[in-house]
Length: 150
Image (cartoon, rainbow, N blue to C red; front, side, top):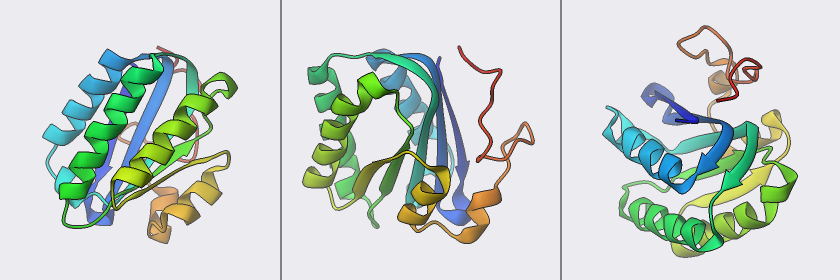
């Protein structure tokens, strides 16, 4: 799978890293995996890091349906969830912009595309300590994993 998800429930923060090619099946599996993790309900801020994504193999209709499912789930949460999409590949920006628009329109949460890590984190309003969080590998979330291109 081309998605890795790390939750930091103590900060209400989720870091999603995507690399290589992304299919709708990958997206659905990753979302189901995230929902099954302890602490998922406490997440308020989500940084979806697409710096390693090469391309998306998703039809616009599939992405629209996923946005609707996510928006329905966010609408049921006690607190709205904000999602920052970081550095998508240029050819995916149109579809992801429509995805972000739908999530915002259909849920109480916010969703936007950002090209800069610090700006994305500031927009999320995540606690300052989140800027320097470390993944299980020891790498800071701000630093892209150059070896992971699955």
